[in-house]
Length: 256
Image 1 (cartoon, helix red, strand yellow):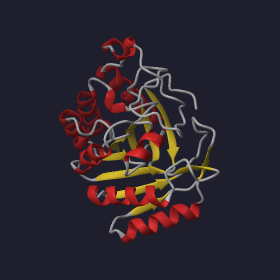
Image 2: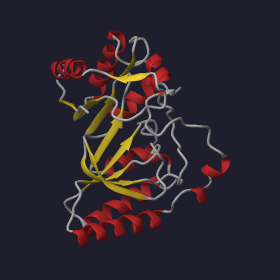
Image 3: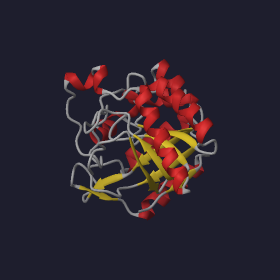
Image 4: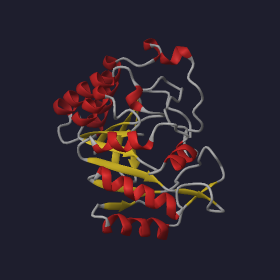
C-alpha cells in the first residue's frame, strides 16, 4: 500500500472504526515505526536516516491542526461527517516529538468544530510506558493499542521487536480503557505467525493482565510485507473470541 503524502487522508471506511478521518503525523513518504511487522500493509520498516529524526522532518502541531481543520470544513461543506479523527498513518504516530501537543490541539479542535466525533489513536504500544506519551494517550477518547503476542519469541518473529514483552504488557495495563487490536496471521504450514496453541495461550495470559475494555480480532485484508502470510479462517477468529469471552473480556471479530 502506498505511503501517505499528506497530513490528512480520507475519510476512509474502516471495518473497525467506521468513517475515519486519518491523520498522518509522520514525515511524508517515510515510514517510521518501532515495529517491522511481517504483515504490514505499508511494507518494511528500514533504519531511519538522521534527517528523518530531526524536528524539521516532522509536521509541526500548527500544520497538523490547519490540515485537520481544513478537512473538517470541507466535510461540513459537503454535508458529510466522520465517526473518528484517528491518529494513524504509515508508522507509529506517538514517535512524533510533539505528540502530546498534537493530542491536546486535536481535542480542542474537535470540541470546537465537531463535538460528536471521537479522537482516537492506532498505536503499536511500544511507547506507552513513557510518562509523557502515556499521559497524552490517556487524554484521547479512544486508544486502539496493538498486541499480537504474549511471549517474547512471537513478538520478535511477527513484529520484529526486541522490546520486553513484560514491559509492553505493563505499559498497556497502566492505560485506561484500552482496546486491544490483534492481527492473527500464519503461513500455509502454520509454523510462522501467532496462531499456534502456545502463542494464543501466552497472548490470553497477557490479556488477563491488561484487562482491556475490548479486544478486536482480525486478519489480513491487504497485501502484507512478507508474501508468505495468508489470512486465517473466520472459524479460527471465532474460536479465539470464544476463549477471550470465557476469560471475562469482550471480543469483537472483524472479517474481510
